[in-house]
Image 1: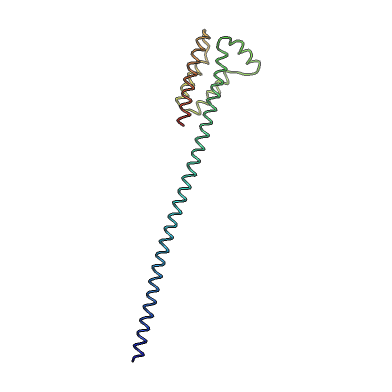
Image 2: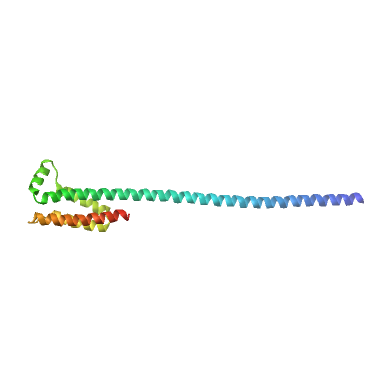
Length: 168
């Protein structure tokens, strides 16, 4: 009988060992899954951080390109306005004759540059450019007065352009 008792004890011990191994294996699988989920979550957060960084870089580059386009439009308008103001100002007949010999049309250049400012904006800069453009599209009987008005409007345009460029 003792052999049956030993056999039962051996079977119980073997069963307990198997159950213990299975239970340990089960906990190991659960712990492994938790570690895998944690690693996946950490990887997802890292990937999200990379995407945010890339998006910010692209946004910064787009803003820089927009600033460059605006700066160029404003400078082009200002140069065209100054040439046109020289034509309309005191001694303008000499400037106008010299410009025509070189094949330049300051009024047409001003119109093109004005269109660039309209496209690039913002509306505050466009409004000031519109005032300059309107003044320089018409001739007055007083070239000295028109020159003074131009200088005032030019300063207002530059102030609006600076503010727009600083505020993005």
